[in-house]
Structures are given as structure tokens and as C-alpha cells.
Length: 389
Image 1 (cartoon, rainbow, N blue to C red):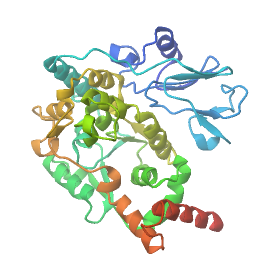
Image 2: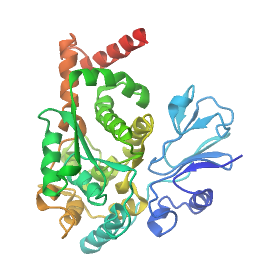
Image 3: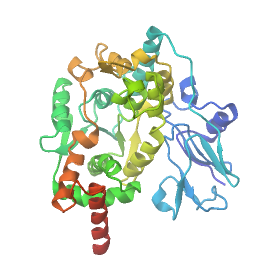
């Protein structure tokens, strides 16, 4: 059987499994841009510890490693079942082989230095003379995460999407101007017709119909489509920065926040990190459905390893989140202070996609007093699309 893998060679994956080393790139082994792995090797289907390379098998397959029984894209299978992150799937079932490590906490000075080095290397800011890729575009919303990605891709176009007057378009224009990248900014303005037309395609690509997932995946898929039309094969994302570096409000005071079970900042951040595999299944599927591969520098092993060593004070405080990430961004020559310190809304809110889906649902008669009114509206669009197909 021919090994079919993404993200690493068969030798590296076997070494990872033999030595139970879930983040091999952090220790100098494997490709320098390693961001997880997945695929089929030696009669077993494998997926890395953070699920950065989603892999699926037929739910009832006798041999899940058979050529026709597994795939990277779930839509190519009749009844896809995702391989859990860190697991190996064989004829004997699933075996959890890798778990997210719990390295010791570094002192603040050391932790910040390690993060600085990891981010500079992952983002390409440690060698500005290196040749720039020509096949990569950047999903750009004007926040510190996407701005850092853009800072390492000086020749890449920057795509922002949203309705007229949306927070993301305004923030992207301000950030691009501050970074002297106005000429690189491509604005994709949404309207209601585009939104309605995209919903069925998005739900088919991600295999989900709930409003939250649809409103997150929809702008990303439309940006990927535009980038593909413009001749780009890959889309660079700021994915993982919020989870790894304490970007969510719920991690600031976790003992008083019902949205997390942990009582410490570090514990709450770790909880958010464990949500990444499911998010990646959605987002990677959406991008690959339109022929685009993701580039996720914040999810490289070396960055993950560095983030896991951060003390709580460098993750989130009462008045500041993503502390270590912003400290890196504020270093000379990285980002302007106005961009490094800015806060932004999640894409579904900053683009107004969530708001306008709600508006369309109510206009179609699905009122807010109804249970899951936006979900009902989404399913009505799917039914209508099926009837006209």
C-alpha cells in the first residue's frame, strides 16, 4: 500500500508515535513549517494531536485504511467518521496515541523570549531577505492576528470581507493604512443575495447547518473563492492565536465565568485549545471545497509548544488579552502600535454575516421568538436549493 500523508513523512509520523512526541516540530525535527499531520501509513489512519489535518474514514469500513475507505475530504465518502485528534484508527478501532502535552511553566521573561523566537520563525519575520511565496493570499480583518500573518507575507494580497459599514472592513482599511499596505487590500462587499446563494454551498462543504458554524465558515469560504479566482492556491489565516494566547473574554476570570470549567487562566486557555480540532474540521473542509489549502503559522508545533509554557499573566489579565502575542507585535519593526493593540470582533460578527442572516430569517417569517429561528431559515434555503437542483 502506498503511504498517503499530509504534513509529514511516514518516518516522522512513525517516530512521533514510537516516542509519544506530539509536537515534533517544536524540537527541531520535521519540516520547519510543520503544522500537524494526517493520512494513512502502514495500515493505520492517523491524525495529529491538535487535529490540524482532518482525516475521515467510512463509518462502517471493515478496514478503515483501505484505499476507498478513508479520505481528507468527508464529501468523498458515503458515511464519513472523523478520526479523533491524536488517534490511530485501524481494523481494531481507535487508539488514542497522542495527548496535548503539559510542559512546565516558564518564568515570564523566558516565556516571552521563547514566544518571540517561535513567532518570528513561524511568521517569517526572522529572515526578511528570504524569497516570498507567490501562491499565498491573506485573510485579513485588521486585528493583530491577521496583521502579524500579513507582516510576514509582504507581497501577498490582503482580503477582507463584510457588509458595507461592517467593523471588519473599517478595521482592515485602518490597519492596512497603518502598515502601508493599502494597495494590497482587496475588499469583498457582501449583500443579501450573495449571502443567500452561499448558504447551501457552505453547508455542503462543512457538513453542518447550525447558524454559528455557517456564519463563521461562510465569509471564509467566500474569501477563499475570490483568492482562487485571482490565481492563489493557499490562504494564510490567523487561526489558533485566540485559543493559544488567551484571546477570549471567558479566560480572563474563569472562576466567575460559566463558559469554562477551569478556575485559572492557564486552565481556561487549555480548554479553548481543545476546541481547535472541531473548528479545523469545519474550516479546512470549507477551504478545500473550493480548492484552497490553509496556511496557519500560529498552529506550527514550535508556536504551540511556546504558548503552552506561558504563565497566566502573559495570557490574559483584567484589562488585556493575548498579552505575550501583543508584546511580540509591539517589538520594533513588527506592527504599528495602533494595530498591535487593537481589539476586533469574531468574523461572524465583525463581517455582519451573523447579523444579516438573522435579518434575512426574520424577513422570511422566522421570528426570534421561534426556537432556532436562524437555523430554521438556513434549512429552508437548503430545501429550496434541493428542489431547484
